[in-house]
Length: 188
Image (tube, rainbow, N blue to C red):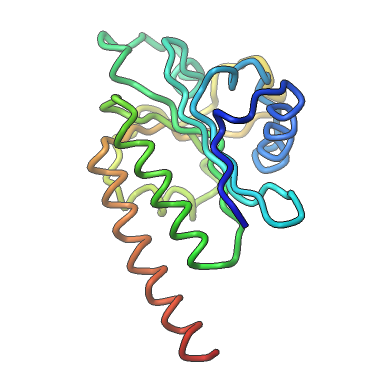
C-alpha cells in the first residue's frame, strides 16, 4: 500500500475514478469539477484499489455550507475549508496510522482555521467519531438540493471543527491504533 498525493492526480479520468469511489460511499455523486485544483489524497492498495481518501476544498463556495437552507457565507471565507471525501477502509493499522498522520499534516499546513463537513444523520458512528473533536453543529436537517444530490436525500448534519479539534480526533484515533497494533503484535 502507498499514499498517492492528490496533486499528482492530473487526469480528469483519475479524478472521476476517485469520485466514483466516494459516490459509492455516500450514495450520490458530487460533480467532478468540484475536486479540480483542490488538495486531494488517495491511498491505494497494491492492486490499485482506492482504500483511503480525503479532499480539502479551499474556495468560497463550500458544498457543506451551501446545502444549509438560508445559508449566509462566512465573513472570512479564506479561513474556511471543506473536509470531504474522507474514507479509510484499509485494515492494516500501521498504514491507517500513517495515512492519518499525513491527513493531519495537510490540515495543519492548509492555512485554514475552520474545517466544515457534513454527514448523513443516520450514520451515528460517524457523528460519534467527529464528536471527539468538539465540533460546532451548524445545521441538522434536510439539505437544500445541490447538483449531484438525489431527490430523496436524507437529513444531514453540518459541523465545523478547528485544527485543535482535528488534532483531538487524531489523538483519540492514535490511542486506538496503538492498542490495535499491540494486539496484532502480541497475537502474531
